[in-house]
Image (cartoon, rainbow, N blue to C red; front, side, top):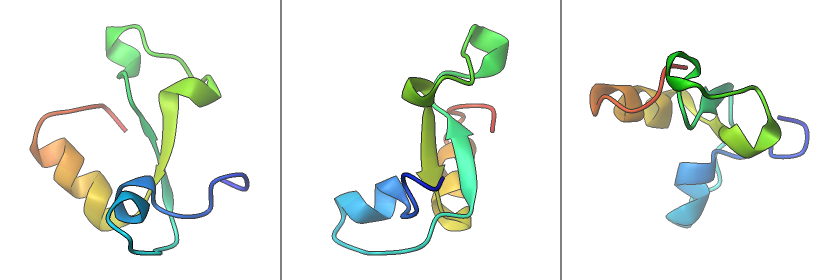
Length: 58
C-alpha cells in the first residue's frame, strides 16, 4: 500500500480516503495471485461494498 496509499474506488469518485486494506481483484480461489497487478488498495467501506456484490476474496 505504500505505493498506493489512497482507496482506489474513492479516488475514482474524487474523494481522497486512506486505504487500510489490500483487495485481490481476481480471487486467489479463482487463480488470482499476489502480484501487484491483481491488488488494489481500498478503504473498509469500499472493500465491504465489493464483497457484498460477491466480487473478490480479500
